[in-house]
Length: 307
Length: 120
Image (tube, rainbow over all chains, first blue to last red; front, side):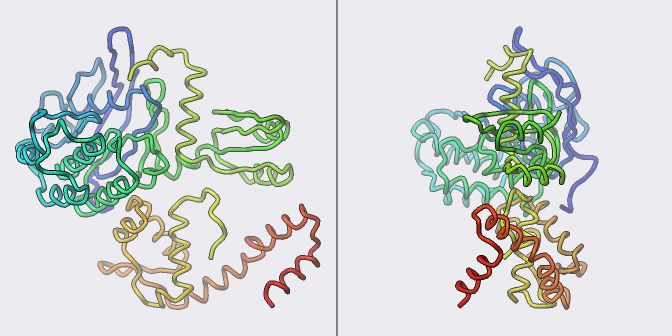
């Protein structure tokens, strides 16, 4: 990419958030240079939405530092107009039509693109005159995506943007996201559970676990960060050695284990010799394994109940 | 075609696709190949991933960059690719065939017979 400015970006340091006794974020620290597409991943209730809300000033952090382009976003209009966060369950005034909603958007987003909005409205076949309360789940998601991309906000947050969207509409979303990103480079932060489907859009992934950033790396590295070995239990155990097992399943004499770490040449040799199957875990399998591992080893389990 | 994808990074797959297209003459010597943006939209991948694919091919000498214009196929690239793939042919194709044959009780001679039958 050509337009990454080292001065610009999101700086998070020790960000915490509690709801009463419930601590969701226990110290989130990360530097996210501007101009990239980030994937914010992790199990349900791990605090992805909470973190996005804090960054966007929609709710207040309990502690820590958040800076956007060097400035605190809290009640800072100059920063906030550069942020767009359409919530997963965004609701509008029930009697507003899509036409009404589109008409008020430029007031919030100085870089609003009517052209992008109209192109996406047509592509998603959104009915301009239907009142927002009558929109289906999929239509509301399509509207949220349309508003997010048309906002042209320097920092756009997409939180589970495609509930209810079919495969065709999701593909359309991926294409439009990349088209917008190519034409007007900016920062996107995308949370999703359809990880393997969306992984190729991302340049950098952050995996939240247990209230902190457990993994922060480029997407190719994340994908090589764990592997799945499958075969007879003794040989599988011998190959794993003392490496960390994130998840394990067995079926009779056969064990399948997701292991943290890179596959080495020794592993390939042992797998060949002992008739084990060996493959990199997909990003989705990696994230799921971290979540499962955390559920079964977690000393802060109550925090997991928070949505 | 290249060996089957076994969880290889997508940028390597894209690089292999472009190399296949160079071998097939879709992009002749000195022809321009698609840009990072075009590859990003075509494969629906992050432009950084598309950029890595092009960088890999530049590092391998298949493509070269003309500043401000884009990426072009190096003269001699198809021949060099062919030579490199021939060198890797035994590793990528013959060894898996022999290993599977071994599991099934097919000797190298049996396999050669099968190849003769298939290609006749």
